[in-house]
Length: 312
Image 1 (cartoon, rainbow, N blue to C red):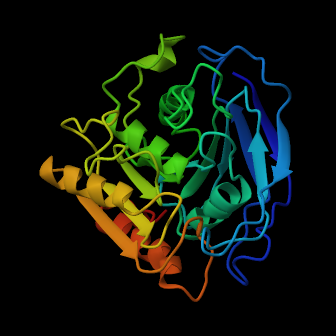
Image 2: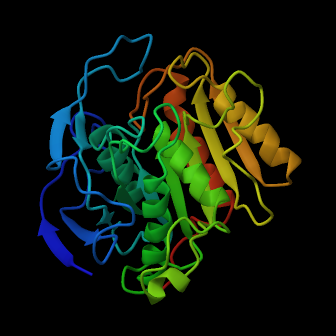
Image 3: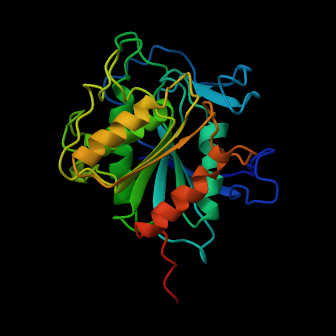
């Protein structure tokens, strides 16, 4: 396992005003000890590019932000909160991008800064994108779930070293990343790759999951949950937020999942914000959808994941 400590000053540009920026130190850890499962390595070098400018009817944040694509070596980028605020909770962050790209700035770095501000370790998962030729267009790619399961196991195995409580590890995802977070939270009994070492004996079940304007949750042309999703006993608590005017991932994705979770007896909370579109991330705005982070923090607190650190 290769680890490297990278010193950088990643300020969250133009979003929080006086709110905290990311920590100046980050730890980057490779998810797999060698070549990831089913990785052909034929998509070219990893690269960074800017997102396209989209119409405000499509997205809430319509300026260009940084994307990452052509990922063949999944990593975790770990940002820790100040020690005196650390609650011991960690959240794996799954940026969206339709399983083609990763919205690294809007749904990765900015989310880690918000999590740090409430005493949570933010860990951005750089999972494999774009979908490979043998992964069906319009369906969730399968390799990212392999990366996510391995990532949960890795974080849990390193919990003590990273100041994390092993039973306080959750996930948050946006758009396609929301699907990935939900799929990880509901697929913990399913083996998606052959074990590569003893770390794969560790549980890959997150302790909670947060899906924000998630896609791929609804079956095509049916008002029911996608047949690729199953809700087993032991599914952890789930928080869902969605824009009521989202035309990229309509709110039915989260609404139908909420109803299925409720039927299965899984603790769940749902927030749908009227007139909100896609891609609002965690940025403050005049729209009520920007208050989802406050609602989520209250939910995490009620679930017992934001307890004040024990006095020393």
